[in-house]
Picture 1 (tube, rainbow, N blue to C red):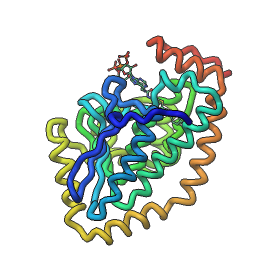
Picture 2: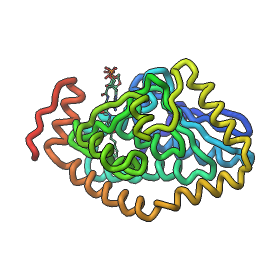
Picture 3: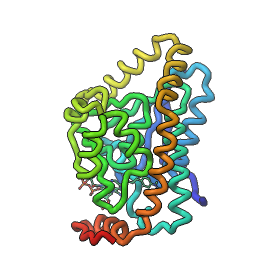
Picture 4: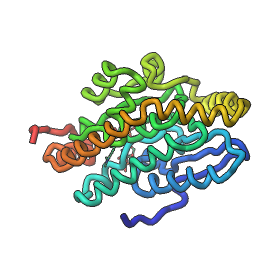
Length: 264
Ligand code: DAK
């Protein structure tokens, strides 16, 4: 896949024990395109070179969105080969988060939709602002969650809630997400950074090897099941990507109108 990696789309900062990764496309609500996904993978590799690292945070730039999903305008015109490459890249980015040697905390500062919620769910812990809105709206576009949402949402909320959220595509508020187990902590928007720092310090102060081994074991507890589910999700996603409903769903989004689906 050819992509020019714009280093400014993913920023890194922090100190010797904590790395902060910021997805930086605020005008497109931090939507995930190739640059962002490749930038995320590179940022994760870079920050983990620091031996003293204890925790990583991921957030979105600006006050409106964590990540509003895959970049629909960009994705709408992709052919079968390019979309298959995108799948591979997206899955690699999610797995890089999940397999990072230290815990990764998603700091959800606004909309976390579609691929954005999937990215948050690949993190170990999700801390959300009370203004955040979360959902898997893919069925409104003629597709399904394709970066692990059909698998990781079930793990977080149980199957009943996963069905409700994925079939309806509805957006929910942070407080409801907390009740459902979709997020782990809700903090007022004004205090989100302090709340995230307080939680990171809880991790930083603990025995690093114990935390890291716990992370590995927790991940491995469901890994085989997850990997086979992810494979089936990708295959189904690619089939749906070829349908007329998918074309209509994405076209309707770009034209800011309701989609008219035909089941074709
Ligand atoms: N992609 C591209 N641009 C987006 C975007 C997105 N997901 N979300 C928002 N934007 C852009 C808008 O088009 C708008 O651009 P301009 O018109 O200013 O140029 C700008 O960001 C501001 O958005 P709005 O004007 O719409 O702002 P509002 O406050 O009115 O609404 C909103 C905010 C978040 C409710 C709304 O923007 C919205 O509904 N956005 C779309 C959310 C969505 O449907 N997300 C799911 C995308 S599908 C794959 C695996 C996974 C995926 C894809 C492939 N493979 C396996 C290959 C994932 C799919 C998805 O995530």
